[in-house]
Length: 224
Image (cartoon, rainbow, N blue to C red):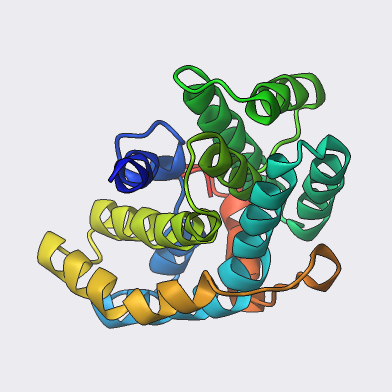
């Protein structure tokens, strides 16, 4: 039961990871008329889970958990550099770094773990960090099963996207829960990717183009 409670705490919207301030490109797509309904938002999340979150973020979270188990800090640094290279959109890359730093710092305030303590110092010194990697390390530090790391990552993406959809007025609360329920198979599938760091990939060109345009917006509600 403790494992479930820790998972709930890590994925709760009150956990100060900073994900509530990101829209993953939904804001710019909404303003461009690309996402205007619950159906559009569900299709966006499904595509992103299959082509970015699963093969990149979930893999990174799983590997970070594995490396934290043996305190392999060299591999974690390499993975962090890999994530920075994959996240080619500056705004998105910085958002991942900030969320990773906040997640690690928060967890380290109530959990003592060698790799987590090292990672907090690492991101503070290098200004790097990545949210999926922080999630993987935090899951290990909190005693969660290894499979929870990737699941927390895929679930967190959808949850943050629903929050963005609600704040932008694309959906209402009941629709958000309907989408969360409908996407459960996709959330689970994304969490089951088993690639190595060398095989990580992502391909969401439309979303990335819209994220680029988001960087140049004069006024915006979200940081991505």
